[in-house]
Structures are given as C-alpha cells and as structure tokens.
Image 1 (cartoon, helix red, strand yellow):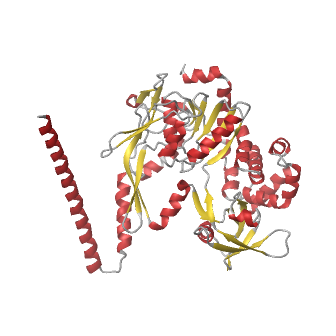
Image 2 (cartoon, one colour):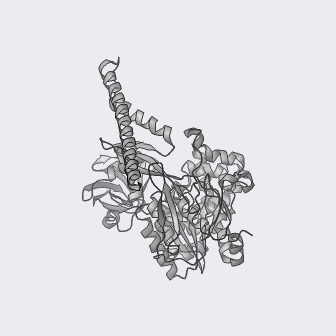
Image 3 (tube, helix red, strand yellow):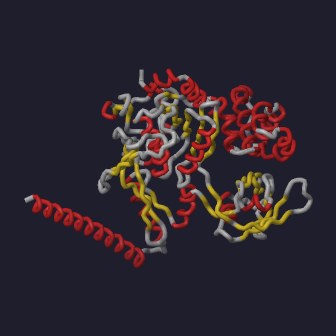
Length: 530
C-alpha cells in the first residue's frame, strides 16, 4: 500500500510540473507573438532589445525589491566588489578640478612597482589627453582597467619636477579588500571593521583574528555599520569563527527551495571572548545574518540602531545574450526562526523611503519609538531573552543618531568635495615634513593638531564653492571637522586602519562598546536582559 501511495505522489508531482512548464511555454509564445507583431506592423522604428529589457525590469520590480535585471555591460562592474579583485594598474584616484590625480598606489601593485606616487597628476592615458576635458570616474575606470598582462602608458605631471614623466605599466590583478580596519583599541579589546561580504572576506577576517589574538585580544568589537551585505557563505564563515561546533547559523527556505541549514563547525578560533557587534540602518543582508546568529545564541551583544531588514536570498541566472537576472529564491531565517525582511507590499517607493520614515518617526533618536507586534516576538536560545523579527535586527543597546554630525555646514563641506581636496593640497605642500616628523602613527596621533590656519583655509575653499560660514553651525561641528581632517591625513600617511584609529576615538558606538566590554558585570547584565 505504501509503495502505491509513493508512486501516486511521484505521478502527481510530475503532472503538476508538466502543467507549470506548459503554462510558462504558453506565456513565452504569447510574448514572442507580441514582439513579432510590433516588429512587423508598428508605426515607428523600435528596439526590440530595449522593449524586452524594459519588460524584464518591470516584471522583476513587481516581485520584490531585490530581484533585478543586470545587463551584460553591468555584470563585471557589479560582481567585481564581491569577487575580490579586478585587473588594472592599482591606484586610488580622484578627479580634482578636472585633473586626474593619484590618491594612493596599492602596495605591491603595478603602479607602485614602476614608481607612480600619490599626488601625481595624470595628463595622458595611451597618448589621449585626459586633462580639462570633463573626465568622469567611469571614463577613468574604462581607460585604466583591462586584461591582465596588457599595457597602458601614462604621461604624468609631478609637483616640483620640471619635465613631464612617462610611465609604461603592465596591468595585473588588483585585490579589493573587504576589511577596512583591524587593530587593538586597548590592551585587551580588538576592533575589526568589514565593508562588505565578498569572496575573500572570510580569509581577511581570519587573518585579522590571528593577528589580534597574537596581540593579546581577549574581547572583540565587530563593526558592520554601513555594510550592505554580499555573499551569504562569507557571513556563515565569519560566524563559524565565533561559534562552537554544531550550532545553527542560518537556514533558508522558499516555495520551491526546501529548508537548508548551515551549521557551525569545530574550526572556530574565537569561541570564548566577549563580542559586541555594531549595527546601523545601513547594515543589511549578510551583516544581519551575522548579527542575528550572534544575538539568537546569546554569543554577544548587538549595539547601535535597527538594521536595514533584508532577509531575501538571491540567485543569479544567466540569459541568452550574456545578461542575467538576480532572482529571489528563498527567505533566510535566523536560528530562532526570525525572518527579518521588512515589508515591501506597498511598493518600491515606500520600501526605499523606509529609512527616511524611521527618521521622521523618531526611531533614530529614541528606541521607545519602535514598536513590534507580539506575533514577531521570539526568545533567544540560551538566555531566553526577547528578540523581534519582521524588519531588521533590533540592537540590545541603542545608540541614537549623531545629530551634530548631520549639521548642514559640515555635510556641505564634505558633499561638495571641499575637505578632501584641502587634504590633498596640504599633503602636497607638507608630505616630506610630515613623514620626517611623524615616523610612527602613535606620535602623529598624540602630537598632530589641525590648526586654526588649516580650518580657515577650508572655510575659504568652502566659500568659493558657495558654502557660507554660519558661526553657530561652524562652532557646533568644528571638532568633527578637525577629527575628519586628521583622520584623512592619517590614512594618506599610513593605511585605512589609521583613519579609523583617529575617528573612533570620539565615536559614540565605540565608546559604549568599550565601556560594556571593559565591565563584565555590565556586559552580562545586558546579555541576561536584567
């Protein structure tokens, strides 16, 4: 009897599958007929390729906010940050007053090997003039990137050099790092900041863990603020370093995708130390997988503001012309069963205005403004604390948005590209003196101060860009401005970790995380939800 039932079920599944296939075929024929009619009888000339792309985009937009069409021209650019490398000459650049400037050369890259320097102005690329022609960032990328082993020639103007300098550079693979910073905040607390979850992220994270443990790290701050996600597997491997064996990290499930669980292994090298994860409204997807797993297993504390709320899993499917679609195939769930995808039933516009609506509702200022129904209530797996699903990861410790940093004057100076050009000019004039005086970052951090003269130069540059100084606004942000300038100088003199060493000194998130980790009773009080 059991065999008969099994045979019937198999037959039913095959029949349902055939019905679906026939339905898809019928709709494809219908659309094919439409295109044929347009091509044969429409009054004007149209692009059938364009019509098809527009139709695909419209269909996917009706499904959910994260199912998207990617043209064949966009595929490489979209995938590069996640693949972890691209082929090029290895520089960071900026277009300053219509001049292409080298901001930094990537250590060990092709440009550094031939002697290109920060501050060099690139006037020609492959004999084509690129100065004062309205060059855009995308134009530069197209010119400087190319297949590994190919050659690009540059003509460069270097300050204090009378003659122009010619360079011939062979393109090579250039790494894209997903780890912005890793350093010891004090004798026992380490800090790691990730900007995305890419193919190389778990290796970068492990390398940072090993380095910090060798420097006596007992506890860790993991900064995921502004990290919009990336590969789910990278998030799983990060959590695996922090968990004991046989703990559920995340599971996925969809209408045609059966439940798939991801379980921790025994290979983790940081299973015991205290952990604080920093989140904000810009942290999404893979960041929320990490934070959700840590929160659900009471492995650490989440500090900051409610995360973005993306709990949908996408899979890439190639199309016949080399383009592809990124289609949502499942939801992911935290170990307690939470789906943290925020609602999107009201359409794309409402979905993308969610962060602004949170700000208007007061949520960014006070945690008391956030309300979830009891139906979204869950309990953590060890301490039985209450957590919520249905729209991002709620922090255990709330940090309000810094309204000072959002004052209009400071924002305008940054947005209208006043501050960084000042830093570039200052480095041009003072690089030799700075490197001679500050051979170690610790000396720079302790002794260097942004002078009043430097600030007045920034103010004057701002006024040339139409940014009028208001004394009240200026006094409110002058300390932030000093810190920002000093951090940018530190980054240009050393690396991105030094930038964060400066800006984190007065950061509310960092100060609170250090306080919690430095006081075990406070840490465990929050973890026990007392």
